[in-house]
Length: 173
Image (tube, rainbow, N blue to C red; front, side, top):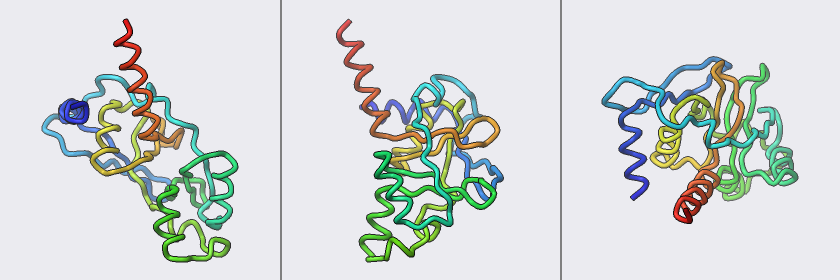
C-alpha cells in the first residue's frame, strides 16, 4: 500500500521536524537509521496553503470567525513578538472548547491551541512530511522557510487529493 511505501522511503532519510519556542527554532528529528539527506521531491512541491494567522491574545470566537470567513480549518497562532506560538484547528475547537462548553468570547486561543507544533521546512523531503503527518495523526503541519519563518500549512486532505489526481493522470497516459 502507498502508506507503507512512503514510510519505507522516509526511513532512508531523517526529516527535520521543528518545534518553535519563543521565536527560536529547535531541531527535533524523526527516528532514522541513516543521516539526513535532502533527496526526493521537496515539501514546496506539495503546494502548502498560505497560513491564516492570529495572535495568542485573540479569543476563540475571533479566530473561529476569521477561519469561517476565509473557509479555513487551521490557524497559525503567533506570540507577542510575532514568533510561532501554536496552531489551532477545527478539531481543537471541537474537543477543547465546544465539548467542554467553554465560552468562546472570553476564552483565549492560547488556552486551547496546540502549543509549539512540529514543523517541516519547504526544502525537506515531501515523503518525510507526509509520513510525519500520518504517524502523528496530524491533519495540518506548519511549513517554514530556511530561516524558520512560517510560510505555509500542509493539509493532509489536499496532499491526498493531489496525489490521487496525479495517479489518475498517469493512468490515463
